[in-house]
Image (cartoon, rainbow, N blue to C red; front, side):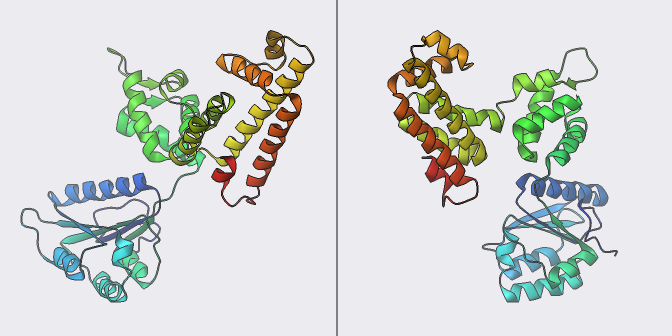
Length: 327
């Protein structure tokens, strides 16, 4: 069998497939592709799932070498494969198996942890593939969205819609796929043969981008809600994965606006004039102006300076923990 080391899509001829990397969606998707290919090629499949953190060597080898009861081919899925392969005796035994794998079984190994290449990978390349599942670039994610929308969700996406979606969501394929399903459903029209996802549909039905989310920290901060600000900071960093640089810029921008409002108010400007001069609008305008009335210019300047220094400290990595610096 020809080597498959460069392959990124599993097929039915592969007897061992290793999927490693941080992209959970890609690991699952490649696994589904392999299972579908085996089902189509053999007309039936027995599947056994094992956890590499607790499975023994005999569990894996017996599962591969024991014929399936109800189907002509067997798929053994070994999750946490890095934990299983961490023991030297298991690695050597699996190298022996990879040199002559059972023809009636396929081994799928998956791991999100560190995968250390070695002789096992070279042997696998002769009978299957070792596939790295890593996050796509923004350009790759945009290309993927167009194909995925058509193939999986039976919808065509306008280029502008693809660009906006990736700008809002980022290159996480799992989140993008979930959004594509929602957008395709929203764009479908009764009696219209083709479903088209436009930029307007994305704008209406997709949440805030990470850049837009970063501005949400300003609300609780300017209102003096310390606990609310800390909760929002944790949400932005841990859940939404908003880049630290965007949060830093948002805090500096807020401190600057409050400082400018305080100075203008101290010079006798009216609140409406201050909002107009600083180009403030919406509910945040009143909050910024109120903060400017509470802080004297020298105090507002101190806050502004602290925000700038904190932001500057996090950029070159001099702050040991940017989240704590922001707090």
